[in-house]
Amino acid sequence: MLTNTISYGLLIALAIALVVAAFTDIRRRQIDNWLNGAIALAAPLFWWSSDLSLWPDVAIQLGMALAAFALLAGLFALKAMGGGDVKLLTVLALWVRPELFMQLLVIMAIAGGVLTIVMFFWYTARRQKERMAIPYGVAIAFGGLWVLAANYLPGAAVAAPPL
Image 1 (cartoon, helix red, strand yellow):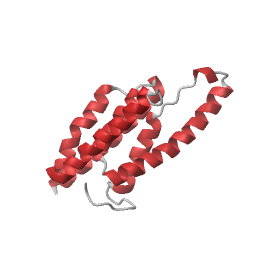
Image 2 (cartoon, helix red, strand yellow):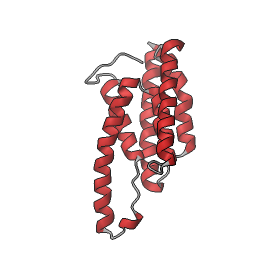
Image 3 (tube, helix red, strand yellow):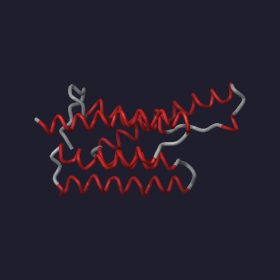
């Protein structure tokens, strides 16, 4: 019972951190390293409270995060993604089961497409298309919150077993 309470508390803290990441990305086009670090440092406590075994469960989470970082770092090198976005998605891979991480990526991509269209019209209306910058942390946070609400929180529509 205590570990369930801790798990839900950590999921609520993660949701708050995602909202903070979205707002700082809107405001400053930056996701702070301290925020990504805090999310990463809380992941082992979440693993413990979710009764994950070191092998293979924690190893899978670490492998997913490493694979996500490798792929996303390549996109960063191509200037297709910001560094804060890469780090935020990488630390989310520490929390979310692999099949749900794929769901997160799909929801994030849809939200990112809508966000890009809205931002295009916003910057066009203000005659600032050349200064257009997309706060993609908003789409990442939306995808993360969607996955948390749909799969992890009590009363979720699709009740998924703990990691």
